[in-house]
Image (tube, rainbow, N blue to C red; front, side, top):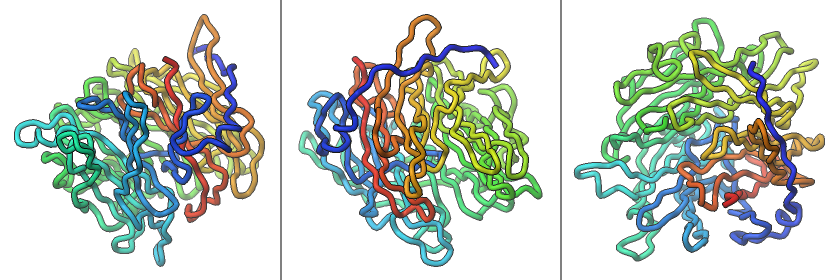
Amino acid sequence: MRNVKWIGAIAVLCLVVVLILLPDGEVHYGLLAIEEDAIFTSSPVHPCPPGMYYEGTYNRAYFGYYSQEHKVKVRYFDEDTKVLSDPVEVWTSWGHSSSWSTPLLGDDHASPAVIVLQHQTGGNAVHNGKILAAAAEHGSPVENKGRLETRRSTYPEFSDDGVPDTSFEAAVSVRTTAATYIVLWELNDGTVFLASRLNRVASKSRHTMYAWTSTDAGASWTAYNNGRPLFDAAEGVDDTYYAMAYPNHDNTGLHWIINRYIYDDNAYTDILYLFYDHSDGKWYHTAGETEFALGDDYTGMDLVYESKKEEGEGDLVYGWDIKDDGSGNPYLIYIVDERQEGEPSPGDVYRANYSGGSWNTELVLAEGSGRFWYVSGAVFDPLDVDTIYVTPADGEGNGALVAKTQLQKWQKDDTVAKAEDITSGTAGSNARPVAIWNAAANNSLRFMWCYITHYEGTPFTVWDSTIYSYPSES
């Protein structure tokens, strides 16, 4: 492991007052409350991306989330006017749990991925600037309760020749059962790549990733890899995969961070990596050095971190984020919880990157994340792989919350100490941070997170969460 200096947070903002008193959309102490009833999926994967900036006629950040009203909503923040739009209800009666009998509404795994189309050509060019959203439920096998759908806005940038119009076209159904988690990206030639984890569809994995592509700006979808999984379990291993993907520096491919889950030990385990090169249609280890055969198991992927596999002991590891450094090199964040007498401890936050023919791993912060129970996390700054936002534990929490966590900014800096306590002394969990894709240095919304005051876990339908956004320092 390389010896790298990471500098911790020092400047405190009065977020306790902000969280209690800040009304929807008001800026106070530099923090913006997006919505009181709102949550991002985090298990630990999140929709890729939860939101992004797009500068066309307007300069706006578009993003989506899930609410206790069982609705998937999209909003935008206008960078020039500093106005937060009203929420647009894209899906209603959405978010069934993964139950095999009577799935319940309200499962927080249902937040969407949101992109803005900008690489369409020919007859599809009329769709550039339109918002494309994708949402899945939580893998239920019950018909129309494990759905995967996409919807496209009627007009580019929610504007009909200058007249505001936030309507969406009819939903396009991709799956009616078994779907959960979302990856949605438009690549440089206008191909839209959609992926979702399917429950008990693959021949070997309990859950693994499948994909679809669209060449008509999301109007229709074609099964990728002839409808077979992107990767599967090894024979005789009871595995599940969690996966996220983000584009490389020139938008010609996708970096993937993959997390195994072994049911026999109830353990999140191993951090794995793959790269999809859209220019030649192949999958590789380490950004192009060794080809991966689609449908292969984890042994054909890059092993970035190997867990200690001791039944009931060892460690638990969670993949949280992946980012390109601007030169094609992948950077990953993962959190390792050491299990002691079967119980995990607060997690150590690590960053890994591939360069010089090998993976380099750096400890960012020991016990830098609360014990994982859907209320912790770590994420890269959207512009800088040397800046990470983490959620260290702050007290034990309680049965309905599990872990009280704060939010801190950590920076790799070999000479100057600079960082920030974004929250301090709050009673709940500052958790599930997500970056706003394509943010510029002068944009007001760099990343968002959930402030969770009540969370009961399975079946993930009882929670109280507000989404906040952290502005840039510029």
